Image 1: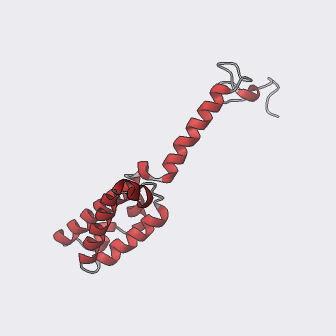
Image 2: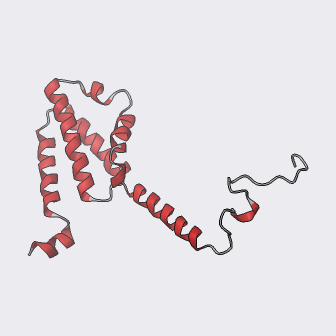
Image 3: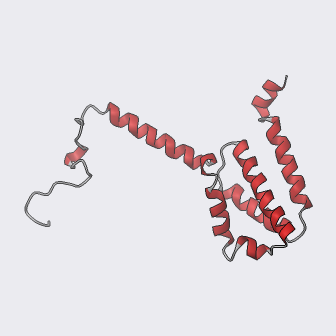
Length: 145
C-alpha cells in the first residue's frame, strides 16, 4: 500500500527523519537555534539539493555539529567563524553529489562526449576548426597579427 504513496509523496522514512531533525532544531537553546535556522535557510536557497536523502543526511550532520557545539559550550561565532557564508559553503561542499548542479555537470559532460563520438566531420586525433589537438590555433608563420 505504501508503494504508490511513496511514489507520489516521497519516501516516508525521509519524512520521518526530517520531522526528527525539526524536533532537534526546536530543542536547541538560543542562540544556537537561531544560528542553525540561518544556516539552513542559506542551504535551502544556495544548496540546490536534488534528493530528499541527501538533504536529510546534510541536516542530520548539521544537527550533530550544533548539538556538539552546545555540549562543548562553543560560542556560535567560534563555530561558524567570522564568515558564515564561507562556513556554509565549506559544509555544503561535502554534499556536492546531491546538488542539482553536479547532476547537470555530469549530464553536460556525457552529452558532449556522445556528440564528439558521433561527429563524422572530425577525424580521430584532430580538433575542429583547424585547431591543433591541444586546443592551440596553428600559426601562419607571419608573426603576431
